[in-house]
Structures are given as C-alpha cells and as structure tokens.
Amino acid sequence: MAPTSQLLNLPLEVPSNLLTPEGCVSSSRIRAFLKRSRQFTDDTIRPHLNEIAKSDCSRYFQEEIAPQWKLRGEIIDYCSKYSQELRQKTSQGKTVENATTLSYNLDNADEVTKKFDLRTDPYAYKTYQKNLEEQYRNCDALDNWTHNEATVEKIIREHTIEVLNDRCFYQDWMQAFRKAAFPDKS
Image (tube, rainbow, N blue to C red; front, side, top):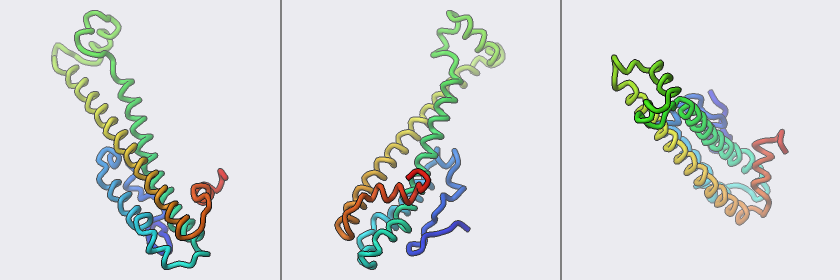
C-alpha cells in the first residue's frame, strides 16, 4: 500500500496503474485523480488552515500541500513526455506527404513499395496514413490536455499561495515547495 499524508490521507506516490500510455491517451482516470487531489488540498485550504496554529503552517504545507503539488506535476509531466515521444515516433514513420508524390519520388516509392504490397492490398498505404493521422490527433489531444492541466495547476498554486500568505505569513512558498519536493536540487 502506498504511503499517505497524515491529515488528509491522500497518496504520496503516483498510483502505478495511472502512469501508462493508455492512461494518458484515455485521461479520465488521471483527470479524476488530479481533481480529487486538488479538492482535498488546495480547494479546501482555508478550512484546513483554520484548524491549525499559525506556527504549524510551514509543516502543513510541507506535509500536505507540497507532496500533492509534486505528485500532480509528475503525472502531468509523464503524459507530456509520452506525447512528445509519440509525436517523434509518428513523425519518423511518415514516409511521404500524400500518395500523389509516390510516382515522382523514387526513393519514397521504393520505400512504400517495400513496406506495402499495393498490388494485393491497394488500401494498405491509405490505412497507414489514416493510422498516422490518428496518432497525430492523439498527440494533439494529449498536448492540449497536459497544457490545460499545467495551466490549471499554475493557477491553483497561485491561489493557494495567496491563501497561505493571507492566513499564515508571507514567505516564498514556491521556494519552500522546491525545497520540500526536490531537496537534492536546493
């Protein structure tokens, strides 16, 4: 069983079944996880801060907020990197822009002829192109949702920092996050 935070009982590690290429492409489970994490930490920070002493704000931030920020960032980064890898593989697999250039570019024509036996399956090349286009659409969708989630994360962190500064005390909470989440890099 994965370790959890003390007060909020949220996971401190990314569930392994979420970080898969399929999880990124069909993102409903990942998005539900991100939403739940945000609901239990950032969205409810005011009531949680009301329950603790001002002197415990830093500890609360380091034990409850920072681990969730790190976790959500890791998930978004994983899917963003997967999208980049998928786009790179897809672009390497594309041999010609369209079928009309086959007869004019002998190198590409030979390559396509070796890859597809157009005499036995005249639609093989079209199917190949259709699959590549679908992969590009998946890349675009992945890029869009990871960019959107990263933007949401940035906005939520800014709001949480405002609440922390208002309720607790002013400090560079992003620096505190970097120290808590990445102690080796500080």
